[in-house]
Length: 483
Ligand code: GLU
Picture (cartoon, protein in one colour):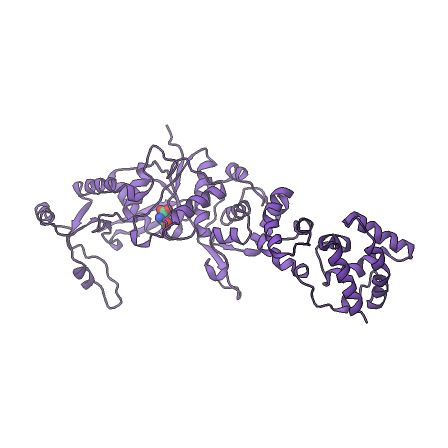
């Protein structure tokens, strides 16, 4: 019977959720789900020094918001728990002792001073295997005396170890290059190098999906599988996410390129669905199609390992904006207003019709954080440039616009139903009664009210946004300015 495809995401709770980590989680999830498999969340918190309070909640919350749901893990539980490594310490000790018994690991009693003395001027230098051949008796005496110790993995001296990574192909290393790495530290905690292997095995992980920083250390993990006599998993290492700086230089995606945490992007007004969609395509592409917009269900159906690329993917903020604007357009009015209105209500005076303004921006913004930059002309009366009245197509200029404004002001002051449709009819009727082009009238009013060249919405929509009092005031001010 073939094993059910099982993948996991195994983050260390050491801070915010980097977008590269989120992509790893997503790919791991999709590799499993595209084949009807199981997905596990495991919290790797054995490096107690690097732990950051609240980081596990950030991980749980990010997965929830992005719809990456796990079949087993903290909170939901499962048959292979616990899923937090610090709650599994006895398991690691038990398996480390097994390797000592089988001769693949040993107690090391070297003092920190001795290890320090092995390093060169630059602080580089590995362990020299000093305790490798201690007799069982010596080791047990040391233990009885209560000497501090670590447990180390005994690496083969010769030969090579290799494995075939799904993305990168064959990776091979000379065993002579491998140091006897620590499995259990002096404080009793296991190292990542050891405990993730035990966990992946015990949790039935068939495909280890993670960042490529582990590509070259994986032979050491393969040796652990071999030492236990366990079947090795399939390895899928993912290329780094890169960012491009202003000069076009590409380097590992970091804060200097822009927001790099999921939460920061959400705070800027990016939608989780859009972020997920975009990062799904950063290193994977669908076979035989140019489809770009994918729902999570579509990704679950279409994702496949053979669409993965080993070329480093560059995170392009403009492309993310494009995805996000597509997702914003797809929001229902209600969903959209829920996000846009609090921002607009905070920024605008009470007389502004923020619902109307929101609807004018719906198809125009790429992310919600951008709203403020769109509405400077609403939140203040911008300096007027009379050249804005010049429009070739409508044959307008400051002089004829002033005439229109003076003429139409009393008409507008008499309008009772101050809404777009009524105002539109008023302006059109006025234009035809004076034998003017409607476009010319609209132009004059839009510039007078909006006070900038390009505005979201035309003259009558803007007047509805501003309300009657402010619109009339703006037109009066515009007339005064037009000498
Ligand atoms: N805890 C490791 C990390 O966050 C996990 C690596 C792995 O997936 O094996 O980098």
